[in-house]
Length: 476
Image 1 (cartoon, one colour):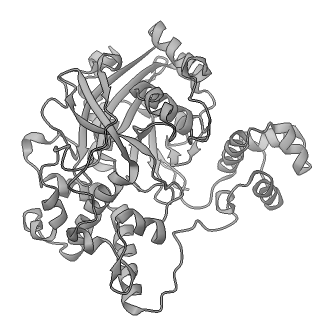
Image 2 (cartoon, one colour):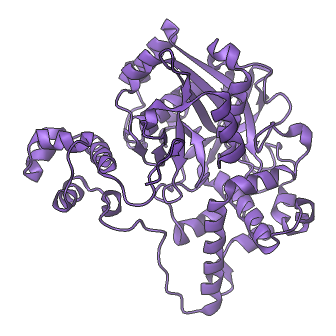
């Protein structure tokens, strides 16, 4: 564990408290109460409650029991080392070398995303760059002031659409390793699935940006799949990482001949040539009780758990703009920025199971307690939700809708009082010995430090920079 007066997150084996958090999350995911689990383990409910709260230590036998009864992966409980992809024994030397080189480049990419993003930013015109970040944006994508979320009109066109650039082109061959002798993996996602799969890795229906701007007050979307995005965005990032590894002292202007796929993509804002599939990233600002300054929630994205924006800090919650399932009714029922944000709060802050499309009915938002509580807070004026902008990570050209939620401390405690520290994508990061849910001070010093010295995902950095720019209108 690394502990200072600044950011604190776990490194390596989980602590006693983290084990309690993991047990609680898996128990809730299984829909089991403490009494039932305690009985199955031969423990008292009081003891299990104390383990979950972190006031009692779980022995080796206890952890084995939790793994058996709740189906928790052993590495989550410190019983095994985390997996880093599958182990292949490939007899053909050329195939083994190709795969080994690809893995090394990808791991290096995940360790240097922030620096690589700054390199990629210089590839694009200064006029489209968002200051202090590695995000680029098109005309009308970033409004002069935050826009109330519900004022943006969304339109959904479900007609099938083709794309010219898919990531399967000749230009991506160098970032698609050999599957067999002389046969490469067909797509980048196929290589990830077989050679370095994170814990969360599946292609889901997603909303595809078609046009419109925040400045116009209207945006249009179609339908696509998550891997349509990954096959282009991660191939672009990998290509940049490989080029920088091969030419460590080369200026970005001299890398153009080493980036054929980026050249093929061309205009990054062309939503016809490739599938632009946005995520929604939300900066959560807590208005703390006086004399504490406001704070914002920060998330560490674990490379073992996620396929994109791995190994960096991000604001929370964040997730793909997509239906909750594959059913036809989900497409329209979930086609809402607010619905998407609430689902991400449920998963990332409260540690509840992801809506995975296995239901036979759509989500009943109106009668969902969390949705009701957040809606009531908005109605009372103890919470506001604004859209800050829309942009692309220069490294991956992955799109993100940038939003901010400002919430009073009492409302936060009422709604998110049981916030988890660890979730399916990483860890909510604290300051010093503070809780992750207490957040990082929303002060000039902390914001500057995050933007200038810490490895941050481009969307999270953009949310933070824009919110600080508009802090007086957002928090008064």
